[in-house]
Length: 509
Image (cartoon, rainbow, N blue to C red):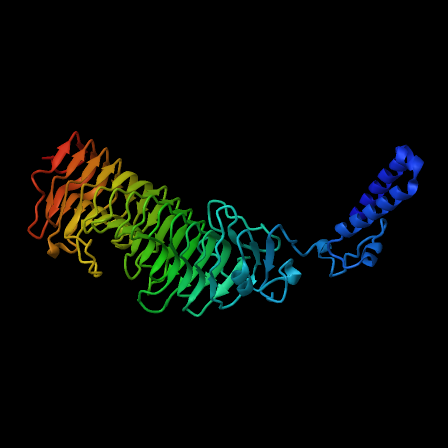
């Protein structure tokens, strides 16, 4: 049709030339010859998928295309069509196909190996089994490589500020490409840069995703039961991302024994709208969302660390360890575990608008609260709510077991807490006895405009302390000023400034 219509247009032009050109009145033969040659050239230049003019001659203006003809994929309503720079993968695809449609789909192994900058790989839902994939090619800023899962038609799965998975959903019922291992190996190993991967579900590997390239995006990945689930050990990693300008978004990790989501050695990384849950009594998650090493100017936002109560150990909820500086945690939620800054090179971070809840009074589980450990300093906490935990804010010093030189003999110093609400906790502020034998002092920490209520003690004093300041803070229904033990006392240089007390059994110094 397209070719025929253009033929008619050029024929009309030729006719006009014959009628009005003075040349045609003198000698028609040269013009006829040139026009016929021009039309012949146009015919050949318009042929894109045929090998001869005889194929073109079969096109008739009134001819309809048989919708049952498998060669006419454009009219197969059940077959999503090729988008620009797009290719298709199914669980039954092969490397012999060209990837142009579901009927001609690639295998996932082939797509991972050959995808180049600007390519979009659409991966159809299905069971892909126990496959370990290594991706090495680089995209670019303008033309990333994309691997996008879908159910029936491309772009029919869209995660909007949350994962497609909710706690309690069935693995089998989710309409995503599924990969299931035997507890070992790495499902997705992404070493390329500018690679986007989205809409997949993984189960029973040792590592779900290992991304080591800059500018990569991991979105809407559901990662379940990583590592050995039947004994307490440090195995099982959900999503590990190393590199700068990386984003982990709308992901859900359940029962990764060692680490849920880890960002390591990164600048400008983002963890957005992610959840890490643990309910395995035997081998619960150790680190839920971890920034480790030299992580700078990075963000955790709208994310959740959720530990079911009474698990084998308390774990570490949202944690910066061994180097992160100038990072932010914002609008997040922590349940039955903690927010933790750990080591003397963890500093200048901001934690804001976040809630922590515990289960101390309904189960005796002592996990939860804010922790400053082993020399963490100059971190700022704004608008934080802590409730139901054994301790509100804890300052600790202990040997981490890594022989790291930044594991200082210090329980945290020069940290600032603004507008912190601590309620229904056993102890509000703890100079914690955990690791007290190492003697690390906590000092020069300031609490401004806070509200502390319904606690047994304002302070638990079980280690050396100095120069704490409590300013413009309301203290209500707190039984005692301090719980002193292990030969430690609240330092007389502690400052109380413009504080109020109601329903207390003590007066402020």
